[in-house]
Length: 258
Image 1 (spheres, rainbow, N blue to C red):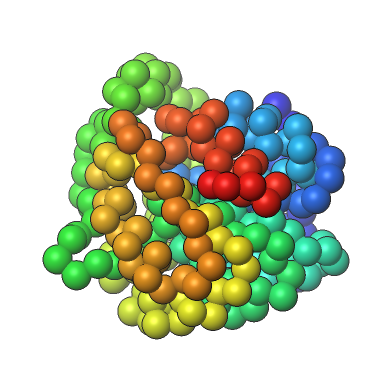
Image 2: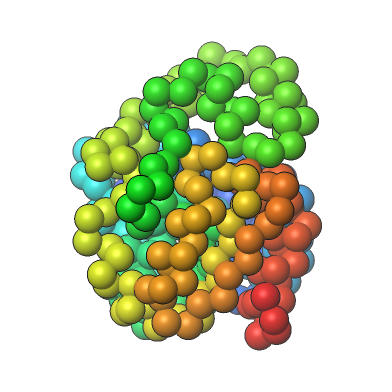
């Protein structure tokens, strides 16, 4: 696993994992916080320079006051990408997918591609999201996965005091960004037509948090979009279907068929 390093953008320093060589692939994490370095990231790092930063306000509340909403987070990552100085492949999961889309409707000039994995941000009338803010701790973990073996493994772990503190910090920041309205922007859907980068959408068919039926709103709104719905998969395809998600992304990024 790559060591955590510090990355600073306009006086906001965050932790980041980075590995691989080649074109940059920037991955924006979901509401649970910085993900572990999994086989999914290893596969991508075999072909790309993979950057996985921790959002400001996650892990530590040091910079939480500087990010008021998802729009602020998107602007932060526009500065982040500008600082890299080269076009990037941008990917985001859930909250990170919402952030990536908010970034893309503002400015796609430095995006070589966009991958959205079960993104929040765009609702479908009559189909509510799951409510991770009222689910109990075990219920939340179990509702993220179709294959309960993944949930069993997570629930069997004992958290250190440091990990428990970080989880609480992440929950506060996630609530700040996604509480009201629940996990969507009232404005984002009408600006999806501005996303000019080639876009891949990946969703788990059994997603209890962001239902896969939400994919139709993205398909209708984003001009150059390919989509893939993965059977027997919940809200975290890059964990539960790591090989298939990495293959879909690899084919897409290399210009093949998704």
